[in-house]
Image 1 (cartoon, rainbow, N blue to C red):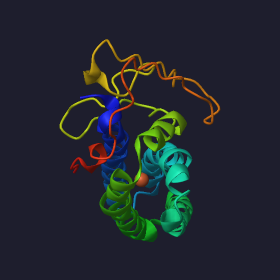
Image 2: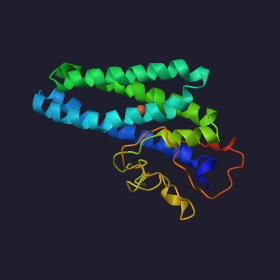
Image 3: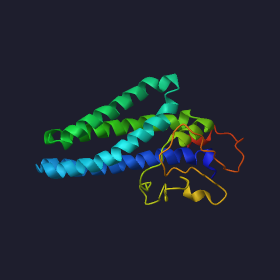
Image 4: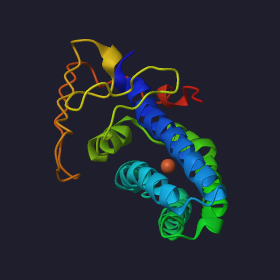
Length: 209
Ligand SMILES: [Fe+2]
């Protein structure tokens, strides 16, 4: 399947959902450490959560959220989600610094927030954004900092320098060069070598988890 027919869109969303699972798993370790009263272990596990959470929320905000925000019907909801990103950061910092009793509160807020994205915003994005908009999402989304799986053991991003769609074969030259600090607004110059003129309308209705 061509990446412009929707699979690329789902790759971005699939990556975010896989990262959600990783963040929730890391949070579980932190909550268990807090329950046992081990402040040092909480500090260490909170660092792991932050290392996963911070680049994830940044990637969402500068990529998908910034494009969706342009549609008036989503602007307010995106603002709420961005506010939740900030309040999660604050709460995580408090827990990391010794307020162990608030670890469950962080986990609850995180799960509620992720549910809004997985079951609200992402399906809405799949339905609402067209091909060129997904192209802009892709161009403005920083690469994941580590290989991410789709939850079924398939790598969504097997290397640091290549494309995000490993199954597309040699004809797709996604020369993203994501493995460096860069201006997120630049043009990635996709050289897909295929016809972009097909209908994107049906592609983004693909079911996804
Ligand atoms: Fe998220």
